[in-house]
Length: 98
Image (tube, rainbow, N blue to C red; front, side):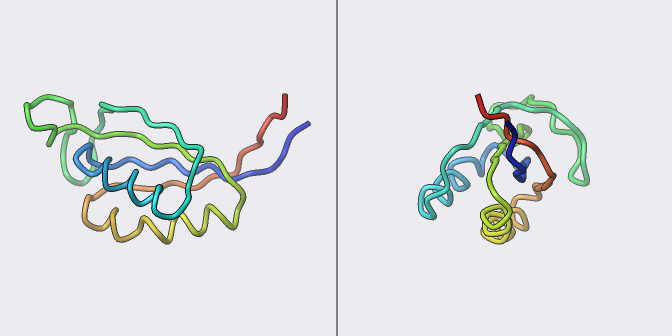
């Protein structure tokens, strides 16, 4: 059996991860996955993970939820993404029930 859901994929500077987690905690957003030290290149240049301060590192956060919750989360993180230069992608997905 499958349920239709939304998947949010958030990529932001590693230095903003604690802020994002606090935002999730403050708004009762549970059930997310974090992958640290992801690399890539965007409008702010290379994020290759090098450097001592963490200023050249990104993190990836995935949240799966229903459409109403996905819209709420997207609205909550917009100001953070404007500051951090991160992105959020929302896609359709299916939750496989086991």
